[in-house]
Length: 282
Length: 168
Image 1 (cartoon, one colour):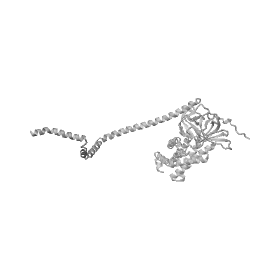
Image 2: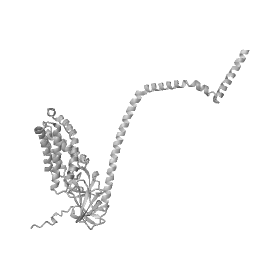
Image 3: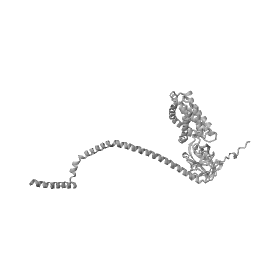
Image 4: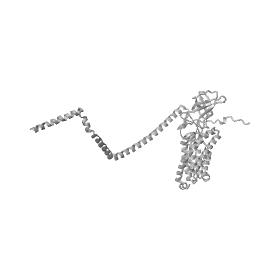
């Protein structure tokens, strides 16, 4: 009888005990106890977890490595293809920009007919400043035709084959261009140099020149059409005893970066040499 | 025949590199002369045939792409080739000394010929500028690249004339 009473109260006492422990736990009164019990277990759990993960990686690694290598190869191929595409597109953009600028230049001078040509090389001698272009007599090019870029004057054709031509740059030491300086309306003769610097000589001493004045072709001499931009005056030398002034100028064309040029194919140069006075023979 | 073919291929490639890349990478105003160096590297090997052919091909190729007349480049590059061929036979038997002597004299010959030509055409280029801005910087670059090109041409010649190169 006594034993059956004890069994009857046992679940109730256990339930009350559990509830009491839970109440103490929720109340935070068991934290020191649980901390003391769990502290030694945590490093063991961490150690086991690390070993398990290493074991799992070891088992799965061969399959993963092969897959990752394959993926990496594919991605590298994709990157290479895209890089090549980017370079090609950048090149196309550059070409379009150059052609667009050349088109603007051509529209600004509607009286001229142009033939576009790509620069394919330069004269191997450092004393001579010539470029080679990929258009020749088959495209209507003739000796003496002026060559321009989107910025301004480049030079003139000096030799032509069926599908290539050689162009003397205005920076060549042997190049001579008749120019006009604005706003002074002064004429002069421009020459190149070994260092590719440009100089204007034979400017009348009466002309008032300033740094920044524009230099255009004058059309005198028959070698170039008039009013093609050449550059800007950077400095003027006017000596009291000299017959003429001299000036140096910056070309508007960047000759180091010439890629595409325009040849004015409807301009026929005039050879004025027979008209020049010859010294009288005594 | 093989030597002529090799001359056209090698010097053609050198001319293309010269007119597109080398001329745009000068030291001051003096670029390296790849055509001259390639030609000298071949002509300095006494057992390889056709030194005068290499000189003629180099002169003709440069004359074709340059504003200079063909006879002038033929004369300057031809002389440099003959000199390079004569050095190991008649003067020294030290390849390096021959190489640098040939590069020095060849560079001076080629530049002097061009300078003389533009001077005859009454183009004003001061001799001092020509020396300081073109000849001396060009010589420096030629000396720097002479050895690698000499070695490269040696390996190239070994492909076609292994016995001759081995017996040098």
